[in-house]
Length: 207
Image 1 (cartoon, rainbow, N blue to C red):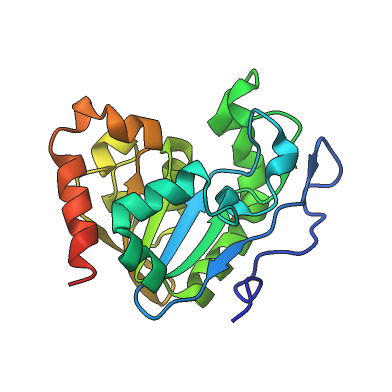
Image 2 (cartoon, rainbow, N blue to C red):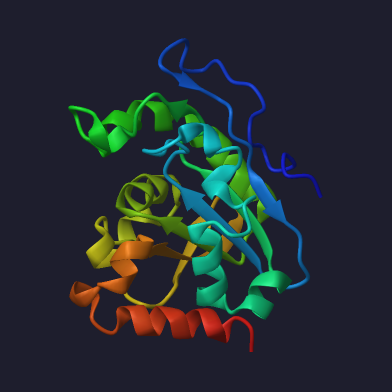
């Protein structure tokens, strides 16, 4: 199974020319157990953006996100799962969307309209058991492609309940939850026991 098997583009000209470039590859780790799909926002980072070669920098085993995922799932469970990671927006920008005048979400919307079909293809071909979006903008944009999006809370606080939602995209059904930013996870007072329930739900996948 190749990391480009699921529809992530190797080339794209849908958005024309601008201060962006398709230069980051999807990430795939083959395993024997559940199929987990991670969906980030876009590959642009604040410091040394040239470091990003793979989605969510998961090609770097000691990256902050890699360490956090191993802690969340448990090292043995993490090693056993099949993991595919992609972004809503495939291209890297010359500055993070959150720093733009219109704000991250509004900035990303026109790009997402062009990337949306790629993402649908990826979900339908990968067929995840569980899909997690990372951060509020990723959640808000991702749910718009789901068949039953009207039943899902539009904000992170209304959607992150600590349990997984049963969702559907075309003929593919899977469990879904938005996932808090790593830093938010550590100080998630507004989410009460939802974080504990979320971690317990992750554990139940491997029983």
